[in-house]
Structure formats: C-alpha cells, structure tokens
Image 1 (cartoon, rainbow, N blue to C red):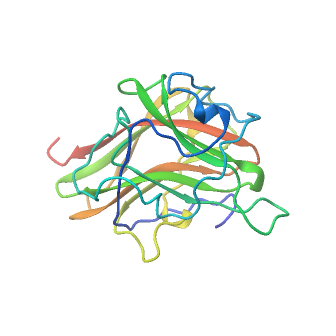
Image 2: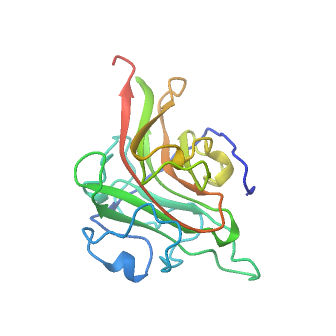
Length: 231
C-alpha cells in the first residue's frame, strides 16, 4: 500500500451476503443497536471497533454470490454485501492490523433509514475498508454512491474507495480502488458518480473508505445505485 497517494484502478468478481444489521468490529460502539449511532463524522473518537477481519475475501458467511444488485441503501443491514479490508499493521508491531470496523447506523441516511459506517484507526496513516457484491453491469452506464460529511474541510482525511469490474487474481487491494475523491469536500450528503459504461457483463462492485490521515476516522456511506444507460 502507498501512503498519501491516490491510485485509480479497475477489476473484480465476487460477493456474498451478511444478513441483518450486523457489524464487523467488537467495541462498545458497534455493540449498540443501529439507532444508537456515534458521531458519523468524528475523526478523533476514543473507542476502537476491534480487529475482526483481515484480508480482502470477506468473512465467508452469507448467501451464494448473485449478479442481481441488492440492498444498495443498506436497509437490510449488510445483506448481499461482503466486507473486505487492506490494512497496515500498527506502527512498532510485527503483526496484527490497525483497529477497524463496519456497522449499520440509523440516521442520518441519504435514502431510507439506514447507512453503512466504516471505521479505521489512522494510526498508521493508511488503510482501506469496503463492502462488495457481484453485479451484472450490462446496460449500466454509471454507479452512484452518497457519502456524509458533517462539515466541509480542506484537509483530506478520508477518501472514497470505488471499484468496478473484474477482480484481480488474489482479490482486491487498496491500489485497485479509485481513491481520488475525498469525503470532506462538502457538508451533509453528497452523491458521487463513477462511469462504468465500458464494463460488460458480471463483475465486482465495491465501495468503501481509504484513510490518509493519522487519526481515527468514521464515515457514513449510503444509496449505492446503478444508473441505466437508458436513463
């Protein structure tokens, strides 16, 4: 992985589901019901979401992969999505990754009542976490995803991580993602659009967060949509 660099990439194929409003992580924050959300834009929180999942192949649980895009607004928790990570080790330690987590929060949301929250401890000034699923891109011109920022900032703390296409051998890594758009360029919800018109057939769609600042970061993402070429 590269620190403080933005590399765009395309490739992929996979997906599974994790049903219900489940969460990756083990801190007190993630053990709360979905309605008891912490500040989604806090970058200096004191609690950690644990180190529950390393690697980029998800947790291995859930339904069989399907090319039918489902649950883009996370109203059914992480159903249809698989969690992936590419994380650094804690500075000064030989093993184990930085604290991280994925959870479902109720409000604010861009669509419906729920949104997915990504958390990474930025102690290593790096790290990417995402959710992915298998999608048929036939007839799809673009993918939209909404991100929440409490306030506009010139500091680039968290970048959107986006991937669409055929998954590379060995799975997704940080460098495979488009990480050119930073979340703090607005306040409230903002929809970002990615062109996927050149992708044909079934591939992987992944959306997530990349941290490039040495602080704890939690951000909300929601309303992932496939835009038809006919629209």
